[in-house]
Image (cartoon, rainbow, N blue to C red; front, side, top):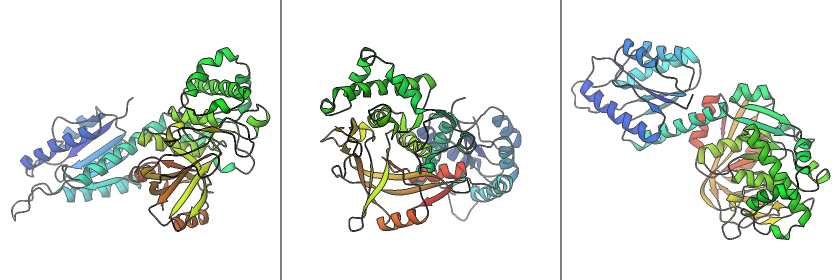
Length: 445
């Protein structure tokens, strides 16, 4: 089944139906501009029979429940007993206040519906007040639709954990049942040596086309020793074929020490190109890091940076995020391109070595797992500054909206994992709504 947003305008026929009809038509126009996946009743749902007939024919992933006029709680209850998907409750503003008749009484209806939702589900729902022409209404409904679409995408996502986390990096380890229960994600596991062995079996001729494809992304790979270039091509082909054959949408990969000791060439650049191609890939086998990146990419359609917070400048108000060399090639500064170097610790290439491009609005994000097994979302807004590479590897400098010292001190004191995603776009509203839909705690910085 495809993603579906259902517009459910409930009311009764004793209010000013001419005014309600105008709002009904404007509401459909707005929703149609925000999604191609909407389903709409032909008429306002002004009786329980009308409501039930419409509900019989839908299979929604998000319900936009609107009081087109006042409706008692029985209407909302009928919706709730049929569907468990997220709900956005929409109250219409009174079209006229002139001392005469109350035209819609949508707000009172919203109280009745919200009371039923809380009693029925005891959970979160989204809420917006205003007319279809209002920018705030458009923004809030749009972000709810985008969040619901990500929730839908997660339920159809197959992730891969390639190898285990290194000693002391257990924060990225995930259980398949836990991911399925909390996010709807299917997780499969494979040993890193299986892909290493697969890579070793390829001939140079079999990898020639893959190498040519990879070189289009990379600047300066000709400075890498020929053996490492050929081994990189083998590894790239092995990962790409595994992703394709197993329909993998996101992966976390073990990197050190295996790819240095057992293969002789790092996996960093392979993950970099996969990210540029739209296959989310984290390193150090961080499954929740990959999940964070995937969510960011689904919200923006762009690759998401993955790295450690390694430096803070209180005067500038910035935090620098860095990793050894696996940022997506597509994020590289335009003046340098996706430069190739060596791994900063092992001194073996190819690994990516560049600063990331600037962006006026970014969102730092992490799906965090708490000690009790529940989940929380780290969300911090900011801007990626126009800065060159800060350290050997790949880096991005983020000027946070909240004081950088508060962000660092707060996240350290609260025990956040040391890997974060930097999303190229302002998506805090969408992430907050997604947290509601998934039952995750929101931690905004």
